[in-house]
Amino acid sequence: MTILIKNGTVVSPTGRHDADVLVDGQKIAALLQPGSDAAASAESGAEKVIDAAGKYVVPGGIDAHTHMELPFGGTFASDTFEIGTRAAAWGGTTTIIDFAVQRDGENVRESLDAWFAKAEGECAIDYGFHMILGGVDEAALKEMDNLVGEGISSFKLFMAYPGVFYSDDGQILRAMQKASDNGGLICMHAENGIAIDVLAEQAAARGQTDPVYHGITRPPALEGEATNRAIQLALVAGAPVYFVHLSASEALAAVAAARNDGHNVFAETCPQYLYLNLEDHLGLPGFAGAGYVCSPPLRTREHTHHTDLWRGLRTNDLAVVSTDHCPFCMKDQKELGLDDFRAIPNGIGGVEHRMDLIYQGVVMGELSLERWVETCSTTPARMFGLYPQKGVIAPGSDADIVLYDPNGSTTLSVDTHHMSMDYSAYEGVEIDGRVDTVLSKGKVLIADETYHGVKGDGAYLRRGLSSYLL
Ligand code: URP
Ligand code: ZN
Ligand code: ZN
Image (cartoon, rainbow, N blue to C red; front, top):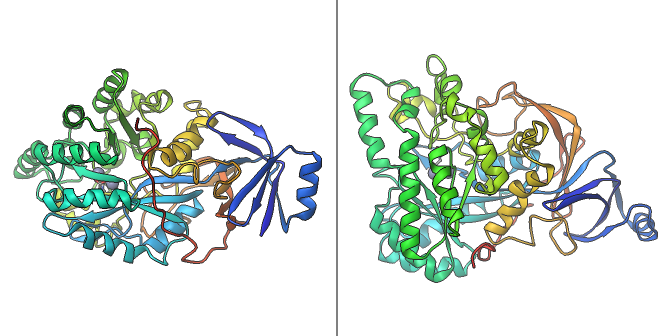
């Protein structure tokens, strides 16, 4: 099918300009000067014309950090690939990179195959995988080479969660050495899990079992320490490192210092660390704070008011915004930790709201429109080997296109979201702006407040190496 998107303002990391976008099948065919003979001829030949007057035309969002169906804390993240990717599409995200999981003692290949089986034929939008290595042993290290060759070019390691996904410094160093050899990218969950477990045990022994103690026992210094340690290990290994879900100013300072020294150190943050905090959300009375238990935890009001994270997004010390989408319902899931915060499954769902929430940074004057596109689409594509297939509106790229209406508005709520969650972490938040229309590979998925896709529209993406590695 040919589609002409006319009268819109096309936004890229380098600027914005008025252009008509011609889509042919799954690809972008041309950007045409509005009012030109070429645009008029494209319009008369197009099977469908979409009027984007007054709207931004941006590359579909790429959420590089999701956990559909993640087994965690005795339960599973509540979004299936079908539901979670559909919710993503509603929010203007047209690609996710999800984390396949290998646990200690498990075979990497079998674990990955299980992830392929979960996603195959289910997804609304295109998807790739990172590989979580929960047990870095000789076999896992060897498998890393094969995975890079097969399009799974990034690996998540955990300095947190001892006994679950945790890697010690030796395992981390070995995996980094391997990445240094094969061009892979290590994605690091940087929190000192050993020290955190001591603090958590001591709090529980004092009877401090409410959700807020999840945050109090994971202080920012322990994210800063782990971030710094991982950077030193990466330097020793000669490997790049990418910090996932960075939340603490101490961690950001370590990343910024390493970058200033010219090292291949990268980081992402997530909307929850920009908008939610320990006192007002994690510290809600009763058990309500459980809905805000995630790791790293929400930081204190004072910490988040420093706005270091917004600054980091402007300076590129934070290159990417992802969601760390890991939804659990309050009922039966978060409730597993009713008596002890340590048993609350960690995670917040937000795959649907990332584009809207970060667009508020534009509204508030924290980010430029171009930087919104860059952090939410173009850089994730480059960082994780999907560019220029994804992340840009240019001839030859996939026609993953969002029409965003800056004059629209959206209210976030459990009553209207499309994620499989019985609460919203952003209940009642009013968004200036609205996702109007979403195309994925030339197919209109969202228009007129209706979902027009079917499960299986999305396909697996075999990723290349990161464009950021020299
Ligand atoms: O709380 C979180 N972040 N849950 C998902 C697992 C992880 O560490 O990313
Ligand atoms: Zn993590
Ligand atoms: Zn995560």
